[in-house]
Length: 481
Ligand SMILES: NC(=O)C1=CN([C@@H]2O[C@H](COP(=O)(O)OP(=O)(O)OC[C@H]3O[C@@H](n4cnc5c(N)ncnc54)[C@H](O)[C@@H]3O)[C@@H](O)[C@H]2O)C=CC1
Ligand SMILES: O=C(O)[C@H]1O[C@H](OP(=O)(O)OP(=O)(O)OC[C@H]2O[C@@H](n3ccc(=O)[nH]c3=O)[C@H](O)[C@@H]2O)[C@H](O)[C@@H](O)[C@@H]1O
Image (tube, rainbow, N blue to C red; front, side, top):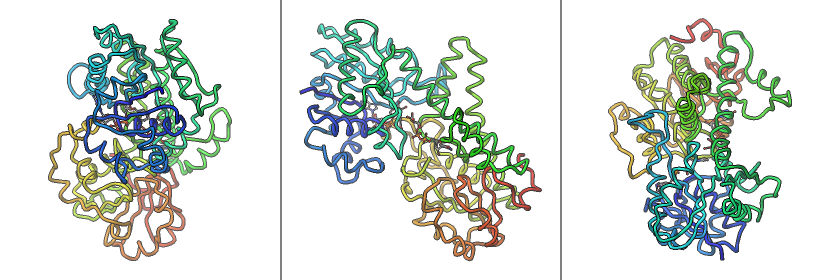
């Protein structure tokens, strides 16, 4: 029986390995992690991540051919194929700080693999890593002195959170990069055979190592660039009276552009877009490609602009101050159908409003109060370390934040309401009831375009919705400081 071990039981390691176990009953899969609570949660009734459909997949295989364990070394030693899916945060200090990937966790995993291995292994990069990481990992692995040989493959993951199970069941493509040597090709074939249990062969792409590593960064950069492009247009729509949803629909009808991923928003979030683009920028700079680096940097800059533009709209609309005013925040996760808050635009928007001394009342159906308080206190990039290693200093402004159990409680007596995540339930709220219990004038700031602006205006709200024709009240106010 082929044995697979995956180091890192996170948003990628957990679901991808569960899918391999489900589709390959002849393979034994162990997912290991240094985090004891995380592994305990994977072995419990309440999984550590919320992902539609995942409970069922895990419960079907757990204890049969899928195991979660903290016994990292034993499972690595026994495995034929070792996936590494650990954190690759942005460096906060030293060379490349604020841009380059911090490979500390990867390096320690590689050193441990080298130390404990007694049989040949295929080592698979599942984490998103800078181009040429495989070369560095090979160097570390080659220090194993027990005559063990390692083949390193790049097999980046393209799943999106909230749709991970569907993405893994029917991926657009699986990408495998390997060395162009007989042993390298053999390793590629071995991994291909795993995916071939359920992925059609024409969707399994094989390339050299560097193409696979770079394709992952390029895919995220292209996706994020589409969002920054439509968000840049949203500012122009507000200035001209165009409607960004109509513009997106019109351009998306061109089959060369395509209709997906053109929803204007308060900004993209998530653990990877910003981190991977900054990493790409750093690689370009290291290769002397300054113009290329600056091009990609703009994607992140427009995203920051979009978030601060939103805060300015809120503050300027509410008579230039939100100090002491209750503002309801609906949605904190970085997108719907996930409890993940990593790099969520809600953090920057909430911190912007707290900076102006707003009294925030936050509701999200999947994010805990503890998580929200941690996020609002965390330094930039600290979130991307294993949770037990994250520094935690709750700051004072977070004391004025209330976290509540539903949208009606959040909006009671509020002056304004900000929608920051596109949860389906926010489309169906009783906005008349909300209006009746809010202070007047009552403001709605829809950062996800989930509300019907005309209906809200009929109720009596003053409404700002990203990229939509402006309310007469908002139109006459400055759009940026
Ligand atoms: N979250 C996502 O949707 C996607 C993430 N990625 C990439 O996958 C990688 C992992 O991301 P996530 O799963 O989201 O991160 P995560 O933070 O959810 O999981 C990483 C896990 O690795 C563990 N870990 C760190 N060092 C370890 C070590 N030496 N030994 C054992 N366990 C260790 C941590 O405790 C943590 O549980 C990152 O490189 C990310 O860029 C790629 C595609 C999608
Ligand atoms: O490498 C990764 O981590 C993953 O990053 C993204 O997946 P994810 O971040 O989970 O979610 P997306 O659906 O891509 O959304 C990212 C952000 O963009 C925002 N978004 C997305 C689409 C859109 O049209 N508008 C928009 O503002 C979302 O609300 C969210 O904040 C990619 O879609 C995955 O292919 C990739 O594997």
